[in-house]
Length: 73
View 1 (cartoon, rainbow, N blue to C red):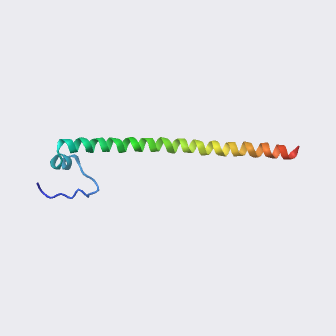
View 2 (tube, one colour):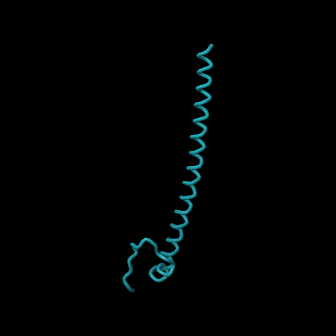
View 3 (tube, rainbow, N blue to C red):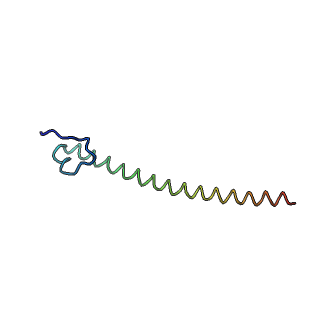
């Protein structure tokens, strides 16, 4: 087997097929799928956090209005 630099930033499928056995390929594909799933979940969390931040701002504005109304009475 020829020497290969697996530290390169991108391996293509030929590299994997030439240097990895079936079990390693299966593990690689599972890890790749898991990373994809994690990225999707992280994106969903970011979207939900933006909504939480917006709701916090709205709640703060409502509380400010209530407080100012109470101070006027």
